[in-house]
Each structure stands twice: as structure tokens, then as C-alpha cells.
Length: 327
Image 1 (cartoon, one colour):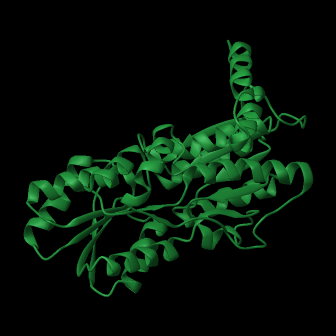
Image 2: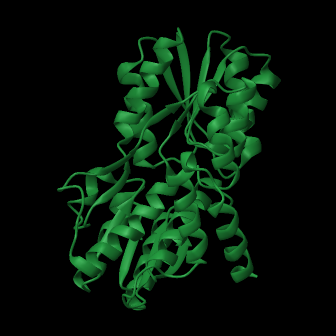
Image 3: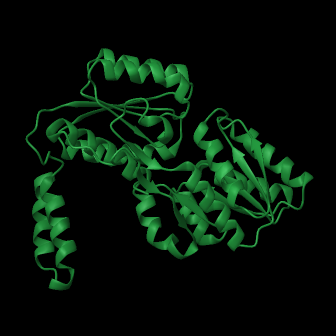
């Protein structure tokens, strides 16, 4: 089947006009790759261990990027996760015991992860951190950190709220103890000219998230903006707004198919995209480059994948990418 598709795609693309030559050629090469490695390096094993909870679609996008890079780089890719820091650290220890060739890890709760990362480095396993922990990454001995600066991202949110004339905002934190979440809200408070308050909710319990936001909106009619820190919580915030009879604008960090649709419909004001697909893809690619050629990017600084403020204007363009699981 793959060979037939390659033949058909190759034939159809050959008939494209020269105006689409570059894209047609790129698509033809991708089709011809047929899911095979583009390199002849050894089949190394890389493990990614994140702080994701069950059902968090953000991490599906990260994995999509990592898996695609793994195919290209002839890598065996292993993924595991746990939203409790001690269990996440144990998963890192398990990867070290398996003698994997590289580890990709998040540092949402860095103190709990420090010893596990140190053990990996002592075993000679290169480590790349992604998504959270940019400030601790270098100190822990990681090659580099890939993600957005959470404080900078928060500051961008505050500035966007100012542009929209908002006066009183609610920042909804769905995972207590996550340093990146605190940095986002702190950054937003720094640049927001109005008043911003934090609301802590239990992110693994969506009814609790909805009731918490709804109660806050009912008790304070002056709140004109709600900022959630993850795409799955944006839709819940919209429902809470409707239940409270509030006119507050709902904004969010991160992008997925529902968020893109919400931007298009106007139920959401804006989203902060940190390009999770790129985080996964680059993490695998950089580990491969290090193993193959001792290459390191960043010069001791994080490799930034965001923030990018996304509004209704970009919704149509990004909807297709979000639907296929890459944005």
C-alpha cells in the first residue's frame, strides 16, 4: 500500500506547475521517505518522561513531533509520564536502568527531579529538558532546554490583555506546585495594568475546574478576562462563563483543535502557542545531533519555541494543522 501511495503521489506531484515547485518537491520527498529513516546511524533509544496527567492532549502533540523526528533519525522512541513528581522521577530512574541512549524530561517540579537527572548524567546519558524548567536545566547538567520562557510568555499575555482593554483578570492554575504555571501568572501580573488574581483548581477534575471558575465569576461581576494555562481548560472556562452569565473574555495558553475552533467562533479571545510539536521534534533531533556529531544548540540558553499570540486572524490557517495534531 505504501509503495502504491508513493507512486500515485509522485505521479500527481510531477504534474504540478512550477509555481508550486518547492512545496511539491518537498511533498514528493516526504512521500518517498515512506516512514523510513533518513540516516544510517545506529538505532539509538531515546526516552521521554513528562509530568503529563492522563488525557492531556497537549502532550499528544509533543509526542507527534518526537515520533516523527524519531522515524527520520532511526530512533527507538519510548514515552512515559506521571503527574506526580516522585513517580516521574522513578520513571527517569527506570530509563537510566534500561541504559537508554538519551533522555528527554520536563522539570515542572524541579526539586523532585534533580537527583534523577543527576543519576542519568552520572551514567553518561545525555539529557535534554523540554517545556518546563528552563531556569534549572543548565544547572542540572542538561545539554539544552527547548520550550518557551514562561515568564516572558506571561508578560505577553498581560500586554495582550492591555491591548484589549481588560481591567480585571483571573489566572487559573490547574496544577499546584508547577513552577512554570506560577511563572506564567506572575509574568502576566507584571505587565497587566489591571488587577489579576490567581485561582487554583484541581486540573484532573474538570467538573471542579468548571465549578471553581463559575463560582468566581458569579461572585465578582467585574472580572472581564479569564486566562487558563492549558488548552483543555479553555472549553471548560467557556462553559463556566455561560453558567455564571458572565461577559468575561476567555483566553488560554496552548493551542489544539478545539481552541482553534473557539478562536474562529469568537468564544475565545486569544491563545498563547508554544508550539509543542516543535518541542518534541527538536528534542529528539538535538539528541540525535549530539550523539552523531556532538552538536549542541542554545549556547547555554534555552531554545525558544514561543510564545506566539494567536487570534481569530490566524484561526483558519492553524485549524488544519491542529486537526492533524501538529499545532
